[in-house]
Image: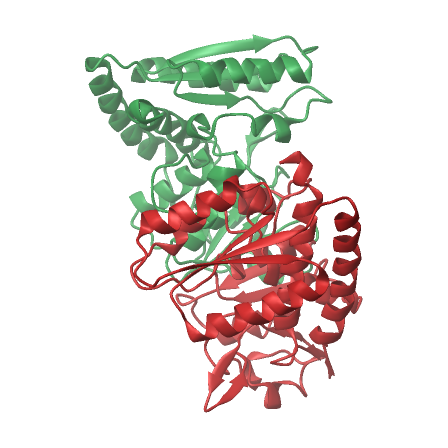
Length: 283
Length: 283
């Protein structure tokens, strides 16, 4: 078993991002990410601050747009529209979760596809599912996972891939990316029967459920690659959706939590922000 | 084994379509489908004439836009744009296949999403994959398959579904529809290893490859539902992608070719044309 070291690979990606951001600055373009945050979810605050700090190091400007927890749907929509219109902003994140009652899924569709750095707009996901050529934003976590596998030369073509979880941010776009890369993909979810039989067939098992240590030894094929997208706080400790201690000896490769997928997600968001800035003229 | 009688179910759907079309006519709206055909592929001609005849019976106007086989990409794009602009046209089909050299995939993206009766636009497929609520066109063959299963009260939730073929018109949207309905879906394709092991797990096996009689007895689980999307002409006879004679005794339900999925596809296109006409005011 070997760890897939997301921190190390993310560091390399971040270096590339910094070089590209520096080149843009020389042309007078400052890559810029707007984060719209409604209310003050403590976990979001920590996550966003970390993202902001790293972005600044890499030469990306972050504009925090903070709305009160009492903000209405039209107020959030107006904040998104302001960012859509602002030629200085390259990428827009609507920070999840939104306070109760705000329709996160619908609001995210208001982000201009060309600035949709989280790849949440139907048009961007549709292009990905159709395997369209060309430049369009793709969700960061799936991108990060593909980048992590690629950096260890782990091939995907022809492999059986099982993804547990069908979220717009992870499961759905990752299924498309994996399928486009030639994998045979199955997405499992709450209604899936006999999950263990299914996951035991996976050459690559990806878990993105938010259920702490859902995946245990009997669910994993000997020699599988195990990708754990979960970050759960349990009794003050961060644990993934995979029971790392017991599963790791079985796996050929596995992502630790923390230090696996997480750093790749942040690095991918920032890398993509710079890519969007490179296309600023074409918007 | 029982046949899924696509002709009978399509007849019922067509009756509903006719009632809706009649109601629209009373409001002065004539549901209208534009078919853009480039060149004279003989199979397309037959298929299109049949569609036109049935549409007329149901009270849907069909406008054939025929371009010569020598038409250029800008000429086809202009024909699409004319239909986009024409307020009397509710649905637009770019008839496949296009003559060699014309970028069918890109051209289909020029169809206004609200008139994209084949569900080929990235925005419409993306909405489907994201399981968005609301009205948007969905590819006809997948819709027809879901309608056929529903009309026989065959449940999809929790079932293992294997789809062979990942086309934009069938495999990709069907995978989304099935997944949205609670199935656990695997899409198989050219790069899939050990196809037989995979297909033998399918409670519902859908085959859309265009390879005559690809699916044979060892690939089918006892009691499976087998949906054959293929229509191939072999030695003057129409055969599906499934070896019907040998597989049928094993299956609980199976679609014959012809008379299974085919009639459902045509009925679904026309049904959806009327739905698009019902939304004409909202365009």
